Image (cartoon, rainbow, N blue to C red; front, side, top):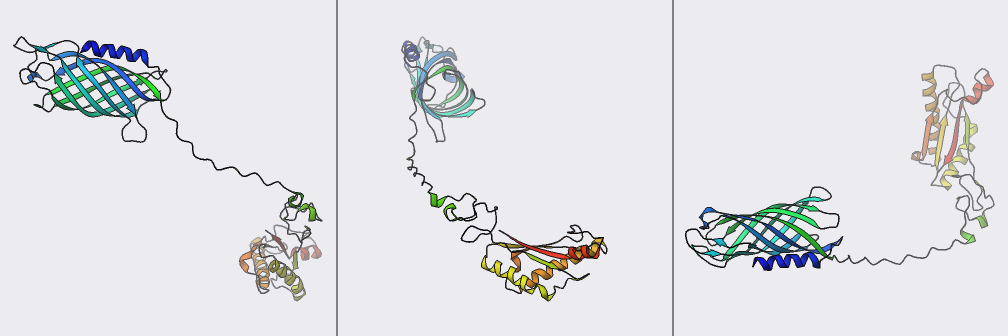
Length: 338
């Protein structure tokens, strides 16, 4: 039996070349068996050899199923009688790998098999067994791997125990099937851009119809691509946040524009001159901004569309050294934006 096993291992080593991505592996191995003391064997420790065949899997709770054979390399003598026997085991194991490094992994195994005594004596009979174990695997650069493990076997005949240790060279072969590529939807041909679709300044009006081709970005334009401008400039009396009636038409024009273009928003910025404390002027500018928003709201524009800010005396438009300059600084400036 041992000659058959060693010959098979040699043939496997010569027949299979390593592949970078493989489905199967075959592993010739050698090792030893430490038997429980009540097996009535003259030598409880004997050499074994064998061969296993592994099938690798993806997306399962285990990584490999191995089937194989292990056999004593010499006749094992019985204790106290002039008899000996070959001991051969056929096994199937489920193997799970746990990667440690790029080349090294631990693996656990669990399975079952058949233990055959060629000469059944002293209560030793052919029977099934269960086993479990742990091992270490080291991958070489050519995808072959050195494997070593230790297994605990329990015989179902009389629950005799054996400890088996092995060292083997795993030789891979058989490329894994490439995954079926997903069906690719045809990429639609890009729609050619015609002259009617070109909009160089990005104002929403094609160049062919744009009479103002260099509109500043963000400006609201008419059907001819020209900017629609509307601004609001209000001046206030000294220390006042009340809007004089003379600005009613400007407020209505600003509000009508915003109602015509409901996607735009209004920016209201209010200012003061420098007379008084900074704190008082800040509060006064905020009251001027609020009164302007209230006047526009009265014209039918929702106040949520306004961004109002009071700057106090921090942004003068003219000098604060003269009465004329201070009058220009007491102001609200309104503008629109998208």
